[in-house]
Length: 347
Ligand code: FES
Ligand SMILES: [Fe+2]
Image (tube, rainbow, N blue to C red; front, top):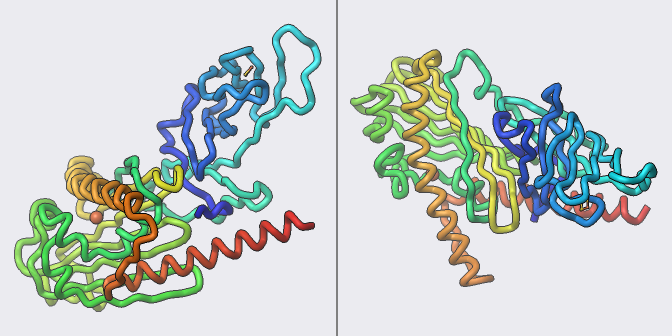
């Protein structure tokens, strides 16, 4: 199940250059490159002639030349040159996809190009903001994209999967959890009051005594999870909005389906402890990255087992409240998109 009429992260800005990059997104092979002026371009990764992946070709100026018989395609996807003949067949063209560059990411629109409004790109400004120290990265996930969404909406798993970094038992046993829903959004707010900080908070946040810890998870479809997380010494007023002597981080996640069983996981970490210090940013990033490697191992093991036991029932627990709300939204949006597509097809 893929939602098509959304902006997805296709690549980091540094990945797209003058060497064509192949990436499968929502099951479709895509090739991306930049023009000489630096504008990112995306084509379907299939030559109109004999279907060689265009990503095997090379750029000649702003034209992508196929590796096999040398047809060249301009940035609008139209063939502009066929070696050895004057006439360019009018149907020699490849599909193009709208792209936008924002927050150090390249965003792609896989749905109806007429609906591709860059204003709809989900806000990840923390990755590109002088008030925050931020670093982002990419993980390849051998699992369905919704397993990653589930993971970020239920943070009780930190106590078990990430007990050497950002987790401890207090999170699973004592957090007060509230789930707020709107038609297209879920917010899970978790407070763990007057408990020991986890290892990462001691190491990089300098918090040694008991803390009040918050985890505010914002889910925006299809697969954007922006977490406002942090802690302050207990009793200093964080639950009332007074965040002093502690720190705040944003854990930022954009998941892009590759296939039904594999995903591109773009993520970043922003921090306000010492925003101008790459050293602090890197230290925090490394801690979170350690935790994310642990998640990725869980996702692929889950997916493997789901393949081995197809259609086996699952049991829900209280901690799944946010997960289930998000799944309901996604399945409604999918139905709406399918219904709209059928109306268009019938017209
Ligand atoms: S397959 Fe691309 S030019 Fe022939
Ligand atoms: Fe995790």
